Image 1 (spheres, rainbow, N blue to C red):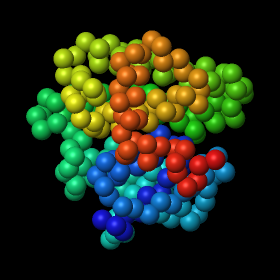
Image 2 (image 1 turned 180 degrees about the vertical axis):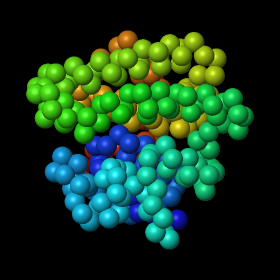
Image 3 (image 1 turned 135 degrees about the vertical axis):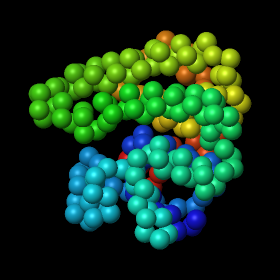
Image 4 (image 1 turned 90 degrees about the vertical axis):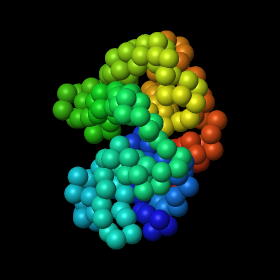
Length: 216
């Protein structure tokens, strides 16, 4: 799997998810950066690779394109089963996917760069407005997430038991992104504890935004 090519951006939380999974699986890959704020993801050369013009995109050794971080992570989990990112039992897998999607489907889409940019260009939002928007939607998602994690016997050191998985990958990337917008984590002690446990692991550290070749 040394011919994997990851098109991504160091600060993209979705890209961070895939990098974590690649590091956890011990899969080597070629890192291709695209600076989102400079519009490099919209250039013809990249659109020829990924017509959606988003990151991350994973190109396999036969040229097959995979996009959407959750789909990519689950693909990696299937081709490299150790360590597993989903529990073996159906209910456990559903729970982990539920937690992951609370972040990946409910929080991230309304807070990604193109939405925040549109708030400025279409509606005249200023910096404070954008920050408040971001914090609002994080809190809308983190409040129920915290309650579910705090009340569930399946929650352990990580979102589901004692080993990190798909939900932790999404959680860690989101909390890391939150820091840029000054999200107050005090109301979310369980989420903060899980994030700290994740960030103590080499795979999460190596994949972190500040450790990428295009970090600024």
